[in-house]
Length: 106
Length: 106
DNA sequence: TATATGTGCAATTGTTCGGTTGCGCAAATT
DNA sequence: AATTTGCGCAACCGAACAATTGCACATATA
Image (cartoon, rainbow over the protein chains, first blue to last red):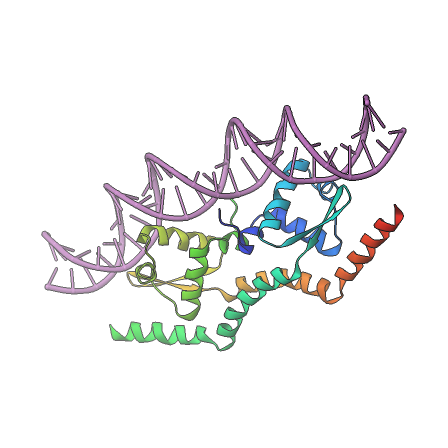
């Protein structure tokens, strides 16, 4: 079962959960109140997000607080960095050049 | 059918395709050569990436060059910005405070 | 015109996903 | 001790996904 960060943020409900938790750690029931789906469905999303390390569990007696793992979010940022560098060095212009070369070769 | 940027980058093969194309616009066949899967499978990924606007098609006679759409990549970056702001303002510390308050309330 | 090439599209198949319902268990409350 | 509350887990279902195979079509080339 693939369980990486990108699959974690692929679902809109999960992104909404991340947004909620980013602002304040919450328990599954508290989170579920914000959605129309069942508590168990939310719980499944929490499980997935925890598996891909985007969330951390903080047990507090009988309750479990879920907290955002900022470090894992940075992983996405790092991935994006690659492309930022490529855009900034204007590789798009190189594309145009290559296409033109191809066109003229005919 | 959900077809947003986040689902676009959810698949590892598609991320690899994005990386290839980011450096140089390529045709489906050229792209397919880099993978062990069939040309049609790659073509499907290209279709998905095009639908969610991450790629742009540049028809060149009989061939079709696929090009990365940097603007759409920035959409992911914008999404990340939200959380960066939250981390930088150290909301995590606030979490700790809230948890401590909860703990002491008992 | 006949043929090869580059590509998209349709049908099929096995797998994963997101959701629901129901159950079980441990921690709190009475 | 009995009950309530907060959660996770398992089974199940329909939809979406990823990949394969086969075909159709348009553009080059001979």
